[in-house]
Length: 174
Image 1 (cartoon, helix red, strand yellow):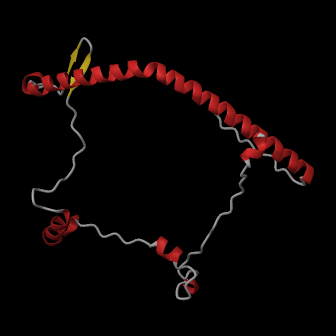
Image 2 (cartoon, rainbow, N blue to C red):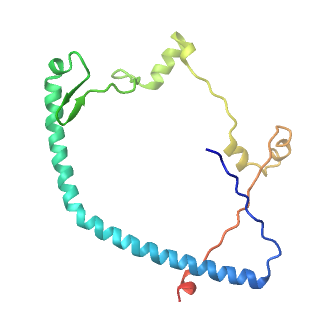
Image 3 (tube, rainbow, N blue to C red):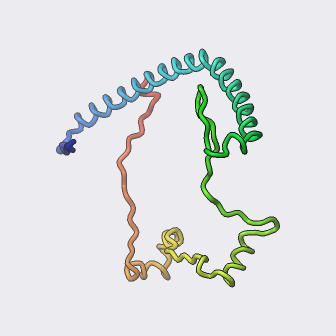
């Protein structure tokens, strides 16, 4: 599969008349799109309302059956899953999956206490992360103590400017 590059033609030398006409078309198309979206949402809501009772009942019944199946599997885990972590039946497969290993603290222990002990006993497992506090630099960029050093430390403040259009919806729809 080859990728095709599409270049966009840059429009130049737009007249006031062209700008005003484009703005009118843009506003009308936005209004039409909103009207079509509202109609579509209305129809989607009607379809949801039609099927919601059936789906709710199905989900409630499935949940009850899931609980029964899960209880059976847990009560008979040693027998059913002695050789494999799953079993097949006519309707599907049930089993137990091991989750991702995670460390948890012992009762009455906190991560702060664990860290304190680890720094003494297992320091190779303690992280120290240094990073630039960009938020603080941005907040204080105009400060006379900070501003002269920005160039010296190899950074500058960049602020993009983006074009936007805000339509006056009431006037367009009238």
